[in-house]
Length: 141
Image (tube, rainbow, N blue to C red):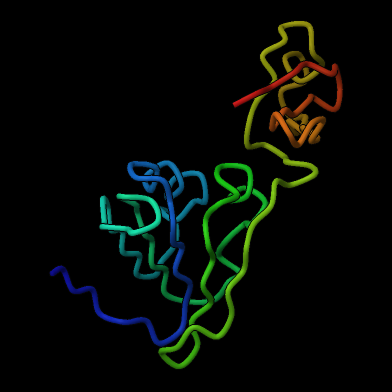
């Protein structure tokens, strides 16, 4: 049994699809933080078979829940205070995401104006389809 020491204060991202933890690590910018981050890959899970887990020391202000919700809204966010789960948060698909995905339409204004933010809005939550705010280009995972 693998043992990773407990967190006094921090966040545990649980129920990450096996193999997705490094994507999340880089998308959330955890590589740029000056705090301890533990990644557990392929942990056994009754619910999922195998899963990844990320433990992050420190407060919730390090995490963009919209990016996390876009990547996988089935991830459970556990807030740890005084070595205990103080709060569990469930994610949902964000209504709007900025600079997470980029428009692939070569005629979109974001292709010409490099400094413009890439903003996508949720067009259809059933199919998890997002559209570019500027040109309506469709983006599906």
